[in-house]
Length: 327
Image (cartoon, helix red, strand yellow):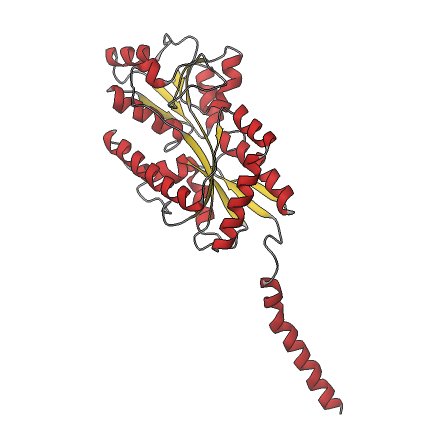
């Protein structure tokens, strides 16, 4: 009898062990905190948007959305880390034009393929970069810059947040379209780059609007032109590059969006897409995003996937035209 009871207990224990994975698998998503990785330091548009949208998603999902900054190499370190993460919906990337479309044009051995190694979830926002100069630099329009650059080719430096970032390739596009030669001085992030312009160590830069806005308003930097096709509502008197430089085809949008590791189940991707749409539609979120000089955006995972592919192809053409060597 004791033997039979012992066998029964062992059978019950084995059944519990067998059922445990099934119980875990049956837990509704999400059942633990979600990590939203940003490939750039705190304070830039990527980081700000991640925290605004992540907070609302956390409230709606009932689980914390933890923003994690993994900065470096033009945002590619964070992107690479997410591309290799477990595809369970608990590790996401707030990616951008820099690490999802521009990086493939500049990194000869990029450890991920933006069009294959991610499951696109949703576009979130798009904003312009803005050309700013130190007030001592004798440039008041893009035409001024072009004129000086043609008189003294290769003598004007420009700062960026790093090789492959949006403020790097925005200037490279300007160089190609205007037929001028400017010298790139990369820094490790927006903050040190804009500090160099403030100190007049480098005369100009194309930072994102939220980074530059406080310095523009205080008069420490002079705003020359926005990179987008239309003027910013935050600085309506500042022309576009197309207007200021006589370059009608010039238009650059700095966008951010959420992607997941490849193989993430479609039901999780669709759930996240719906949650992001819900967050972006909230009046206070829209107000925060618009205060950055950005436009809130919504689309389907399929539309975002096609958009990333199109942007990558466009910036590849720019890199080739600028004869940028892979690094």
